[in-house]
Image (cartoon, rainbow, N blue to C red; front, top):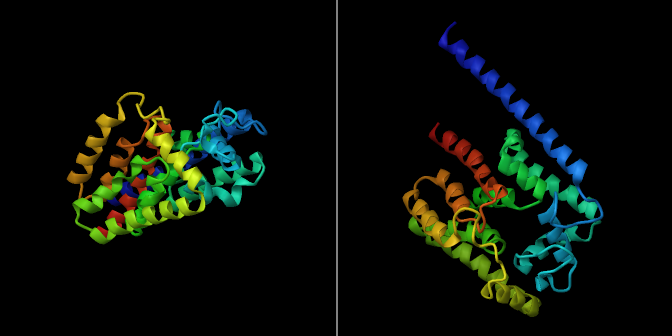
Length: 272
């Protein structure tokens, strides 16, 4: 058997493995969601708990009361604007659309086997936005204004802007901060009370999960910054830095590492 044939065999084998992981991951996620998703009873306990906080938050007069049913909304009002077109949908439909958005990102990454990657599977089951942050990282390299998504949701993923600072890409830095500032300014004009409530929540320590399960955020942020400084010419390290800087280190938080796949593919095509 020649090395060429071995290479072809490995390629086919990898495809079979990828297909198996894709199907297995999809079945596992589907069983969890179909078996336990509390249709009509959104809440944080069980699948789609995070998505329920977004859905309920969008329907609340003040999502920062910290007690909307059993859910808590923690992002800026801008995120509610973003999901406004689907927030009026019934919970069951909203949950289906939310899952579809996750699957659309995986399809865009051309990596269906990510369904078997535990953090991605957990992100889908929880209805969190780890995959959305991963998509933000990929897009932000071309459209720096996309960093506003990270800054106005989980906050700390916005540390990626430091990558542009280290590279002295001042236009990119200006776009990232300018878009974020413009959204905040517009928010204070349109809904000043709501934006004040959000800032007051942050200043008052309302988000009480900034201490991660294993390492506290104040310890991890400098590590993320060092990674960004050291990787100023290696965008593949961006998802790692953002993952380290996530507000909490739950399993779904590591779904941002999915951004490594399209970034790696892009780096390979550039070298060719």
